[in-house]
Image 1 (cartoon, rainbow, N blue to C red):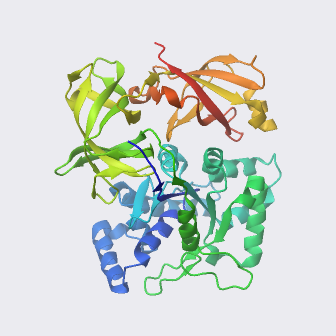
Image 2 (cartoon, rainbow, N blue to C red):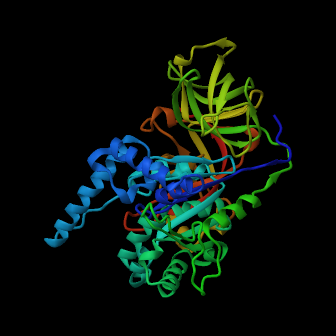
Image 3 (cartoon, helix red, strand yellow):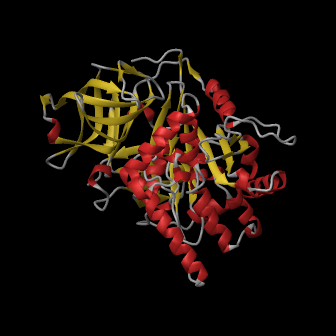
Length: 488
C-alpha cells in the first residue's frame, strides 16, 4: 500500500516519575469538554460503588485512565504504604518507597484529533513505559516542581543522592531524548499550586537545566496544576492560562493543539511496517486481536501481509503470510484502513506457512513481531550486529563503553521492547566506530528470542543501554543495526 499526502495524527505520551499526576491530567482533559458537574458526580458515585472503601477522592480523574482492577487496588495499597511510611518516619526507620497507581500503558483517543498515552512511572514498570514511548511522536515529560526543588542541594556531579534521584526521575527522559530529540517535547512542572510561585518555578527550571543541559532550550516548559474539587473544576495551564504577569507561555492544551498541527504530512511512498505492541484479547464478534503500531504505510482490511518472527510448535522461528480479517481503533470502532502513526487492533485469517494453511493455535506471534507487505524480504535471527559512532558519545559514555567485555549483558531497545542480549563479540579496530555482536540466548523468553526486519531497512537506528555500575547512571547509545542472522 502507499501513503501519499496523509496528515499524521499526534500521539502524545506522558512519561516521567511516579506520583506526579500524569494520569490525573489525562483524566481531567478527557472530562473537561463534555462533562457537566452532574455527570461528574454521577460518575463519582459509580467509582465509589465499584471501588468501595478503597475509593480516594483525590484519585477521581486518574480513575478514568487507570482502569484495570489491579490499578484500583494499588490505590488502596498506596494508602496503606503512606500510613506505614509515616509510622516508620516517626520511629526514625528507613523510608518506604511508594509508586504511582499506573501499571500499564493506557491509550486515549481524543475524538480522533490526537491521542494521549499514559505510562507508569514506577521503576518496576519499565517494560510498559518503553512500550508507551514507542507509540508516540510527541513527548510530555512530567515532574513535580517540588521534586526539582529537593534536588537543588544535590547538584554537585558526584553526589550519590543526585545520581539516585536522576536515575529515578530522568531515566525515561534520556531514552526519549536519544530516540526523538528534545524538539518535540513538552516538560510539565506539575503541582504548581503547592509551590511559592515564580521564585520556585525559576529555581526548578535552573535545576532542570543543570540536569538536561542545552536540551532545555528546545523544549516547551509549562507549570501546571489541577484542583481536585469537582464543583470548582480549576486548573493552571491545562486549559486556563496562569494568571500571573510573569508567565507569558501557553497552556498545555494550546501547546498540544499547536504541535499536533505541526506534525509532518507524509509526501513520499512508504512500504508497510507495523510492530507488535500487545495482545488486545478476545473481542466479541471479532475474535482474538493484537494491537500494532503502524510505523509506515497504510494497512487495509483484506490485505495480505507477512508477519515475523513467528514461533512454531516445533520450536522453529519463521515468517508467515496472513490476511487482515478486521481492524479496530482505540475506541473499538471498526476500521477499513490504518495510516502511518495509527494504533490498530487486528484480527487475522488464512495464516500460511510454506504454502500450507495452519491453525492460529499452531503458532505464537513473537512479542518482537513486525508486519510488512507480503512480498518483502525479511531477516530473522537472534544474532544482532550493531555499530556505534564514537563521535556521537560523550566522554562519560566513551569511558563506559571502553570497559565493556564479551558475555556482558546490555539493554537493547527494539520497537518499544527492552531486550537483554549478551555481547558475543567486540570489534574496536574500525575507524571511529565500535562494532558489537549481540546475542539473544536461551535465557531470553522464547517469544522475545528473535527479532525481524526487512532487508531494505538495514541499517536501522535504535538505542543500546549499558548499566556498568549500579551506583552510576545508565548510559544510552545511538546505534545502527547492520545485520540480523540466526545463530543456534
